[in-house]
Length: 199
Image (tube, rainbow, N blue to C red):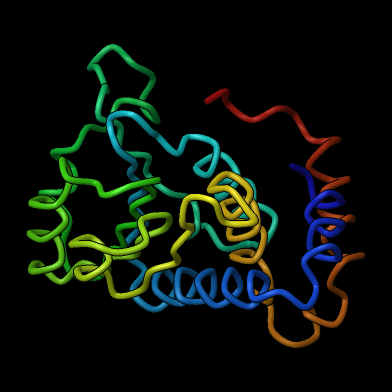
């Protein structure tokens, strides 16, 4: 989903709680990685890996001038022979330390991750949860954005809104006033630039 489609989606969602909720969550995410500067880990479940969100956050990191937003994608099925950006396994969560942020994206309870997430939180990692509405993961997270089954938006759409909002207002109020035109300009620059490494 590109910047124009996100803008159209936001127009459709005007007056709903989704815009405020996704912007608040994105603000917490942005604030966490900027304040601590320790890096962003992004993980899903064995059945649901958020590689699309990872790609969008990499784009937002480049477009907003906030390299801290570019995540390390933690994959359950990572193999040593995978490209470097796809070869990070769940053991990386155990190595996470104070100052880092862990964003867990899961359509349901992430039972296979709970012990690792709990250990990371005890080590001082900021834990954010996107998708899972309740349960132990939500109780462990510092911030949660629930996307319950049957909601008006699905988890993929909410991820687009969060990633777009995460790169906003990075340069202060002057940039916020430019808003849509600035994002279109950055999109045009990105489209004319050489292609990034494939995911």
